[in-house]
Length: 182
Image (tube, rainbow, N blue to C red; front, side):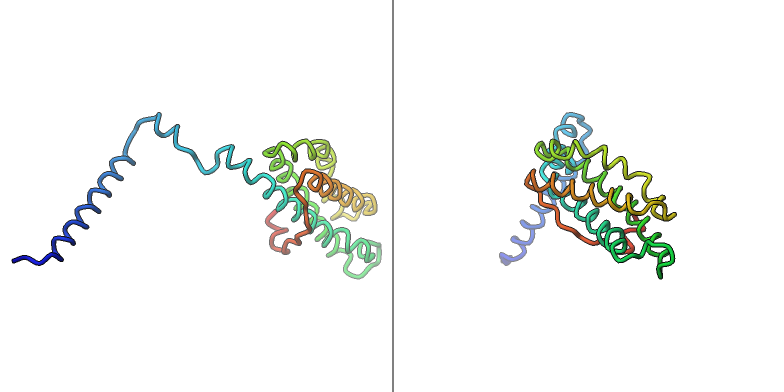
């Protein structure tokens, strides 16, 4: 008389085989309607769902980089002619400026996914675009007072716009490696 264990094993293995066969058959379909109807991970609804989170992350990195490598050294006098470590401070500030511009552009793009943020950030795009050429000027040491004030002003405007739209931005200092990656 056969034992019940092999019958259970046969039933389980038969069920698994049928499930695999059905899954493989479903994946092999060339029907264009089923492919179009399947939701993707990057659909517009998903992007809008995390728009504020992405905005806060990108704007926070921009604010942290600006404060750590542009505003703080400027206030410490590192950008003045004859200051110790001036050249290194200016190069870091230039990298931070490029990083800040990149993250602010990404934050602006993220803000478009949320109606309240898009209205709040839209007036700031001209100011963000004005930062485009400033990192190279910072590296060269040209008119650092106005450049630092420009970066600080734009960052504060973005923070205020985010706070007004319910997405409070807090400074997050990126590592030096993140600065070089952009």
